[in-house]
Amino acid sequence: MNFDATLNVRGSLDYGIIYGNEGIVFIKSGRGGTCRGYEDKYLKMAKRLNSSRGYTVICASNPPDPKISCDIDKSVIEKVISEKGFDNFELFLVGSSNGAYQNLFLANQLTDVKKIMGINMPLMIDPHKINRTLSTLDSVEKIFVYGTEDPSFSYIPMLEIKNLPRFRVIRVKDADHNFKSKTDTFVELVDLI
Image 1 (spheres, helix red, strand yellow):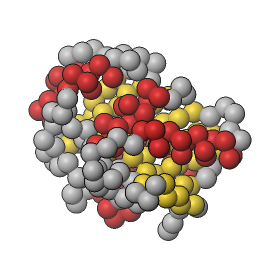
Image 2 (spheres, helix red, strand yellow; image 1 turned 135 degrees about the vertical axis):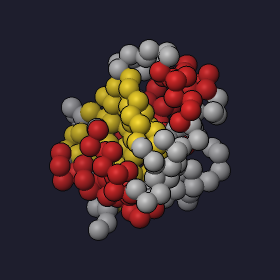
Image 3 (cartoon, one colour; image 1 turned 90 degrees about the vertical axis):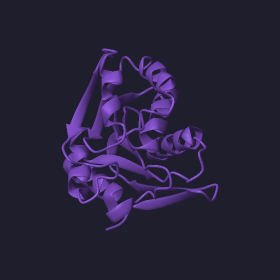
Image 4 (spheres, helix red, strand yellow; image 1 turned 45 degrees about the vertical axis):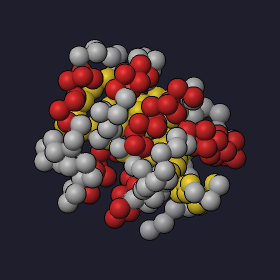
């Protein structure tokens, strides 16, 4: 099992692409993660989306240093859209941990984002910035998934109290930050897109 194409940008960011229709899903791994993910979980998500809905899926690595790579991610998404001549595309963003955090800011840079899903996004790092950014995404459906064993699980009420439009939280019993021993459950989350 492999991507249709891979792309390396600036020597530190890798992107794996599965080509399909004008439904485009961008999956961002957690800090230090590869575009394939542990046990190929992001590649499995991409294949699942492509086979069930025909979507084009771009999986992105996330360098271990704390830099935000939204600008580069945006340029790769735009490159795929341009190369494929997509005119009526819809964008869906999926991120895990720091990848979910970065996708919040990416969503503000893109105009056609329909839905964003964040999996175990750290809530204790700059919660005011997270809330401020979420409040600017009124027209975007927002799904946040947290394992009951994730360090941010106890912070969920901080998000829910805001009554954000088109926002919901899904709790996964006994899942830790990395969904250890629950890779299949992690991959299946992509069905929420």
